[in-house]
Length: 428
Image (cartoon, rainbow, N blue to C red):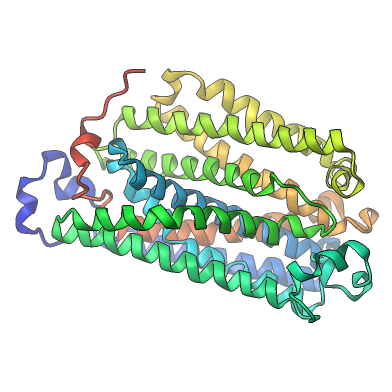
């Protein structure tokens, strides 16, 4: 990497060898992991077509959707955090922001990962999305909701597809602008890119929040077109924030173990990341319980069906596990400031939180594969298909991140708040 004249004034902690991985170090491994992920993801869908493991095509599509929506949540969470950091002038984030950006850069590709689901659903007249199937076209509730799914006066889901295309175009525009301005600041040292980013985030953050909610409506809540929840978008956002913080903590932890970012990212930064992780552990539980409470209290058939689908055939046990694994355990463990500052324990907790996040999406999506005929489920016999498809989507993301992280500086070198980030201390 060529050193610009203004780089000679950088603090010693920002010397090249401390904030860069070896040139090309992630290319081979990243490409290999990405290729394996792509093969597994496609194999998962292919096995569903072939009826392997006693599973249906709906089972395969559901497993793939779990992986795709899990990855999308991580990317959306990172994008929203970057916007919040810019708007708040959060100085402590200067040394960790680049890893949020690396995750955010995958957002357009995470959007593309949903395309096979959309194409299969339309081509097959509804595999998981029963509102596309002819048998349900005369359903009273679907007739009432048809303008949202299809548009007006059409049997093709034009409005649904248009929303999907809008998500991709908007996310591509926003993420590329933020990334390009960040890289421009690396090259020039100018503060102007930060000012531009802050200005754009002022209007882009509300739209990003809305698209996050609506993509959750379209690809998760619409699995049961009769079900509705006004809290659903916030529920998905809570999981997105929870999982993105865990991913950034994991990346930084691994980089520190490779001897990078010494004196740049410290236990003080992990303490703050731990606070955010703790906050969204509680927030997710609050939204999840509030949604459950309102469904239970209202006792409306269209709403209670969501819980009834997840009550039998072993799904109740997974729901109980989520209460413990997604809330109780992280709450009790991350509560301690000593654990937040312990890199080994935070590494374990980051992995655990990501595992809990995927299980949460799994609990939302997979029961719908056999919702109409639960007895047809292969049970544990179909687990290999779930693992293959979900792992495939995750490995695509991991392979990309390995290459992306190694492709440039590990921090936004000329962030105007870098001095605050380097000197950051916690006093509470």
